[in-house]
Length: 472
Image (cartoon, rainbow, N blue to C red; front, side, top):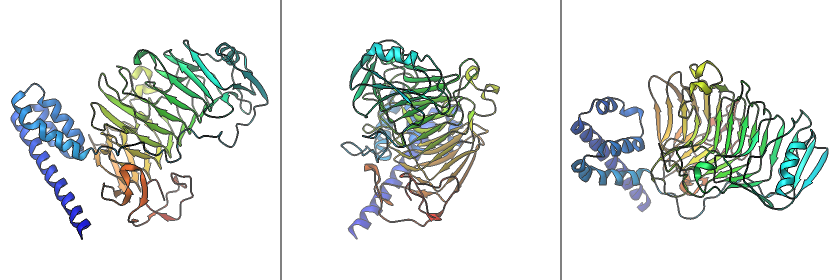
């Protein structure tokens, strides 16, 4: 009975806070009487409470009397809606870099070249022929200038740079680009790479995958302290399609003090990439527009799949300055000159899939679809986020069998088809969602299996009917 009363009081508190917030929104808009504010009032149903709070705080800047009255309750509402993650490290749930080499091993590696100095690594990257694995001896290897590749790998005979065991080889990069990957059929595996630039502006990418670098495999690495740990884009009219990003840990140790994009995985224009089983966490942009995105695909490509990833925007300080989005098709839009075709007028990405992902502790949406079409969002779990946003036509998304904390918003005439989704809150139905303890406190009704999503977050086969969210 006590628990029931507490839950009811919690609901009353939320309703009261939302009522206060709505009143504050109306009061601030009426008092300011700005045309943009009046237009925003007409669109209140399209935006989340988190977004409205940030909007009002910006509008109140420079109005000291209004700030004195309205800012304290807005901050109180923000702290209630954007719950602080629990103290202590959150579990990785089996995602990210694993302590042992992954199976199956990469096939077609018939020769081994062993290296144990930075210069030997640099020379091996330039000289290795198809079918060669460059195995780096355990140790720490500092680099100050870009690493380049010398030869193409081949189908069935790639070229690999790897450590024999994860956690034994550490690279430090002080250059803008760590490894420029501009050749096809290369593999990078079991490495720990950290950006150590004195200025965050100077550590852009651990891997920059461009142009002809199709069929690249980046697997079981730990990459930290970069603005965009992995950047993928076209070059000279060619596009690095069919890449795979599997079981990597992408993180930062502090907010990035940069005006450049902060996006751990930043794909522009490439098609048919698979981004699976990665752990992406702690990405905050401290300067400029403050917007950071965990995983995104944009630039006119198609067929990207983002599956079974764990994305935690902020393990601590969810309401710190800036905006964090979990997963996005479309991002903030692409410079037309960098688009794959038609200056991205037709789409930023199309025929994309985000499935079985767990996205947590983001002060903006967990899933974002921006000027992207034919996007499937299925069996994802969104915890302590602002929900889902679909915006800028021809944005079109199908939202099936998700477990969602937050708002569902379709803006500007965009299309959002939602079916068999279940609301999530701090009260349930999961045991302790904020701590990523995801056992069912009360199992919901089963939803039908989707043909495009045969497995769950843990790669277990789904039944004919199964629960909404990332775990069956």
